[in-house]
Amino acid sequence: MKIKSKKHKDILHTSKELFWKYGFKRVTIEEICEKANVSKMTFYRFYPNKLELAKSVFDMVIDNSIKDFKTLMKQDIPASEKVKGMLQMKFEGTNDISKEFLVDFYNNPDTEVSGYIEKRTREVWSEIIEDFKKGQHEGWLRKDFKPEIILIFSQKIMELIKDENILKLYNTPQDLIMEIANIFTYGITPHK
Image 1: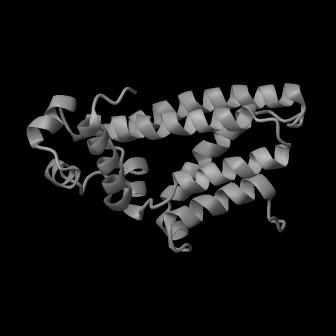
Image 2 (image 1 turned 90 degrees about the horizontal axis):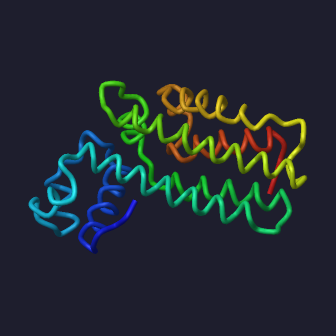
Image 3 (image 1 turned 135 degrees about the vertical axis):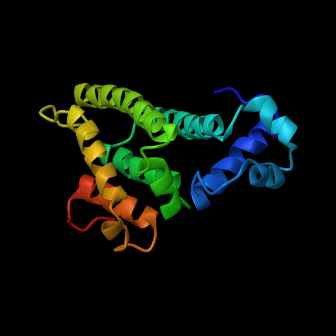
């Protein structure tokens, strides 16, 4: 995604902050414009509606994450350091996510946003799977590991994140997401 101006950047970053904190449905275009210090006319120059803005915010987050992931994968460091780096990226990427965000973006089938997120997530996982296959070829991942299983796990994990009873066990959604990432990566054994 190409950011067209400082005002465009301000709209995107402000929207991400507000969506992460309050969810998609509760945030209004007026609130975004006020906090980003732009007029509604400026907003509509970039986006026809809040839905298209939400897609752009998600694209911005995904594009940045993929760039960081690919940079990490290219580093000549031990596998354990790559795994730690992936977990750190997950931690930073989920910072400040609210329960409202999770419900609106992942548990709301009546919005087009959920379908868009699902589609983009599949595309991203295809890239990640290819990088994991390279990792197998390079020897830092087990050769008998089937990277495609991660896509299946990620879809099942999203079901867990949507479950209100599970969310209640943790102080923040980020705590739950990191718990799942740590269990997936390390099992239940102690780690640094």
